[in-house]
Image (cartoon, rainbow, N blue to C red):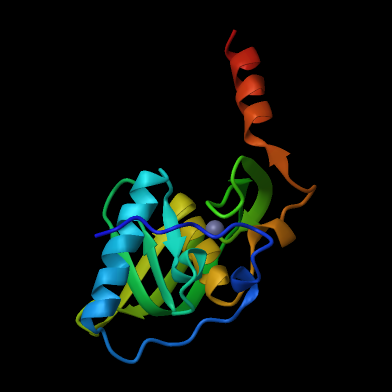
Length: 163
Ligand code: ZN
């Protein structure tokens, strides 16, 4: 396993559409292991392959419950709405207010290329939608309703409120 460098906004690879994975080769397995290591090191909840410079339709998500690897994920269903803060490992130190579906259901292939489904609400639904967007070259910054804010300022506000 190895840590990979996370590509940041401005890097044009983040705007490209990713290709489907046809076969889970040992290299793809290694990529998935590296994605998890990179995700946990960065203290994130999700990471898409293009964020480490690989244009394959693979995302990893862990919101603190179970680790999920989604290969060639396809959104099947969404419903409801949630409005909240969203950040991205490729846009360090920033967050924005983004409205997402409150429920999402996807089909995907696991590491054995077996087709499965995952459904989630709240943070998991948000993470699924955010990471799927990465596979089509889309970043949350284009959805943020009043631009980007500094995470440091958000923390300062929270501290004031708790006093
Ligand atoms: Zn992201």
